[in-house]
Image (cartoon, rainbow, N blue to C red):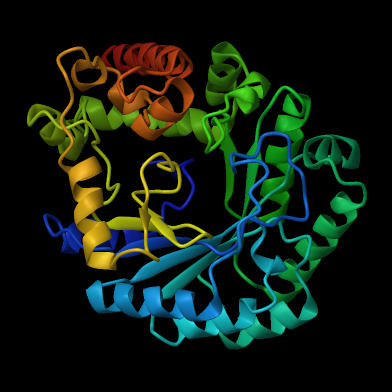
Length: 372
């Protein structure tokens, strides 16, 4: 099958899926180290105006200890911007020395030589960073900060020279869509994994303002079939469906839906997310249901998340659990809740893109059957 266009398609995820199937434990975790950021990106999902105090160093260490005891294998740091924390190195080394695999999500504009030295001695799995535009004008049109493009490009050079593993992401929006193919070519020239993200999510407080920057479904699909890597991915999906190596509906999704559950993913099942104000939630998107770790134990929170996500049933009006296009859809119940305050109201953007992808794959299957 063609290389997946999805980010974080890492062997550790496959290992967890295959080794711990049917076991509920926080094998993976995300840590929002801070709400602070040095950029002001127009599409950012983070709740605006968050002025809370970030979790303390000792609070971080306490929850890491509990998670490692419960089975934590793989984690990532995100923000805000992770490098705004003055104790970043202490936090990084603490979890790293526990034997946890760690990835970093950062805009890298604050990346320093000191960080590079740290990562050479204590390697990261990957640094995942977003390039918001091919040109300075487009990049800073998104970030809202003059001089941020030059800092980003300098950091890219640092990563390349030091051979620290990194991946590029590109969030395609109305503001930078005209540079999408230049960005794809830039990623190829760098020789690093690159993910093109074709949708923009609502904010974690439910504001849908960022969604106004989205491409149209047609523009998103157009890139799906014009980009060589993504087009090959969908052609390989057609081959796998035709020869029976892939189900029309993913097996785990089908099983969850068959049993009436609302959330088909690993939310609060093998994954947990810790916010910068020391709350736990099922994933980075599910900010609408949280458990305060300053008022209760992890185990109490883990039980709460099971009730609210893992065991939550859908109603008879939920259309996604009978949709035949689910294989082609980036369906996310948490995004539905944030955008519409309704977990069972699908986002038409995903429905339209999925339908076009399904049609493309059906046509490819027909072409294969004809021997063309």
